[in-house]
Image (cartoon, rainbow, N blue to C red; front, side, top):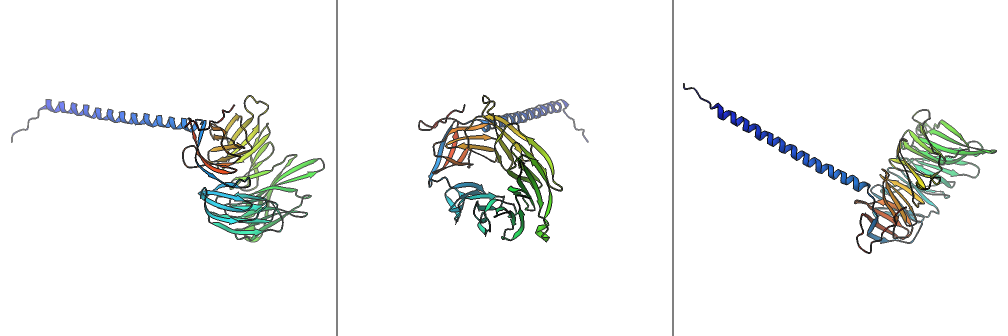
Length: 412
């Protein structure tokens, strides 16, 4: 059998050629990766810059005239919005398009909501209406006037009622059945200023205020109603007293944590077992406003002692009490709200929009009469602005669209 003879020189050259080809392929692949990585980085930088950049112009994409009234209020809920007044309540998935409308006759309506439920109440009246996205679930007529109300994620209703000689704290289930009825004497427990119910409806926190001689006291008391739902047993968990200090606002930040907002401090209580103070946040400056969102709690402090830095100091905390933002700024505001990652402050037709990173996205006057509320709409820097006499869909701009476009005032 003849032996096969290999040309080692040719074979060696091909191996070198293959190495060169593979090397070039790897270089091309890395070049592509670097190219697309640079493009992605540039796009990310552009998006971050755009996200934090300020707009000085705006345009109205849509404009709908409404009845001239200061009495109509709007709240976001579900996939749409709730519109309510002393004459009725309406759910809209799109502004101006009603999913349902329920007439009411309330003198001083106010709305509280949880994830799935709405409670429309008549402050100073004796009527309540429980609703969800499908409409009315039920209504209650109470014996005494309503002072304050709250609702849990399970539809458990809490109300403070003003009796003739005593006040009452009552809990009702979704069917309108009375779960608990607690009397509150001004001489014994103090006047119940406000209350908050936990998301699962099993715990209640109440802020009582009392005066004795020349001193005053606030008591934050905690109750467990998990037993009440089973065997009519109400459990007082404990409480905390504060001399010469008022706590007019309470809010559950999760199922076992309550935030109590006082004149110059906020207290976080853990009530998973025996109530205890988990954190205390104090302020040297006067608190002008407190606003609570789904992810953040915000404060506006009076900063008039250093007006050159700004009239106000804006602070933002996570719901567990960690500071996220501390900035000073000038703004004209009567109402301040937070929705998602943006803060809206407005007064008359002047508004300031700030993101939770502390960047002012817009500040100036809008064409319209008396802003009622501002809500994010679909699209980049696009908002629904509800005025007293119209609803507009507004888009912010970096440049003037045309000569008719109204330029906003530069903030100082």
